Image (cartoon, rainbow, N blue to C red; front, side):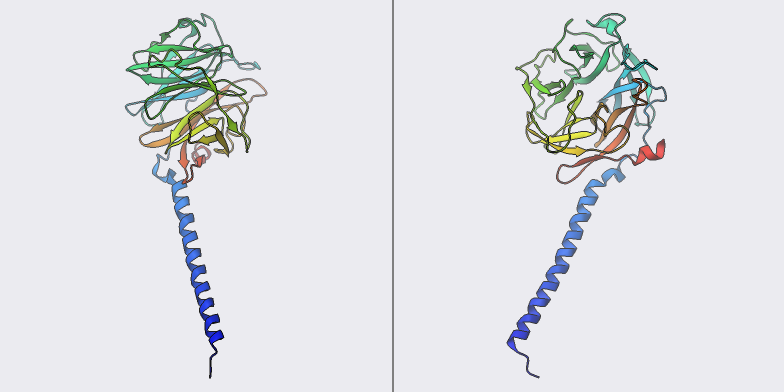
Length: 320
């Protein structure tokens, strides 16, 4: 039987196409497995976390300080049961060595800063260590942000200025890789400013942060800013945006997770690293239609190969 040259070429082309298809399929499968592995590193994390962090309701606006593997969470304190407003007379400090058991450590009182005795507007703050001291940046409702300082994480904390640092609220403090500190604050548009080494003075005029909203991103208060693998993550509630430049612009990336209040605009929280793993801690209203009482929750954070991040919420489903 005589085989034509055309037939031979056709068969060869078909064989090459089949080999290419299986190679592509195999590579695509491998790529998917790599991405899945990158996003499933939660298997390496502690598998039991306490949620809510404490049994007593009213733990709000959590921010984490890690000192020698001990986690200190600084929180607001909601007491206005049945009141459709925020009644917050002080801030609380709890600590844990395993992210499971949280012990009450101390109270930070507005009696000890310019807000004054009897003030119930102790809104969100942030905590940072610098030069062997601990700086607590606090909100006086929407009016201002002040600074308190202590020589130990547990306090006692005293007013470092006797007056506001900035005339806005809900601050976050970020220390970049070169050890430069920054403050980010505000609502309906965040501002950022470098801090002096003293941590109680601005080192530049505050600049607005541009957020390119290609997906939904809340236009509300309480930001959080952290950095992972060279990417800056600016978040509000369960929504986040990313940038390669600290000052932005930031591109919105969507939700870090759904449920547990993350899809609302009110899940004030913080991202932190503990024992080489990242975590997200935030608060969730019990019943916002009834009052302003919140609980705080924690979940591991998983990062993808292209800068994606998400909360692993499976432990909340199991533990509640």
